Image (tube, rainbow, N blue to C red; front, side, top):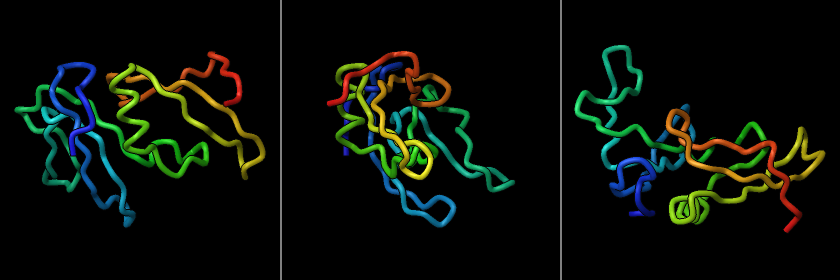
Length: 118
């Protein structure tokens, strides 16, 4: 499924289901970010990859957000940012933060930006 255009090379960003560490998740990646398993069974980019943009749907688990949805990714690709709802440890607090594309990590949270509760 095509979600939008890559923020770095303007190719299509697609959604694929994968299994990682025994969990079924989605990965949103640029069509030019080709990956394969190497001899050590590590998932690496191929030599013909011209882009490395990719985001895993479970990227915000550390902040108790179970999934970064396709809808959130579409908005990020279209508008250059999106707002996500995160939670503190054991759901103690809830807060909203902007997420933007990041060349190395896929996405980055803007911690310093304040957002009024939706």
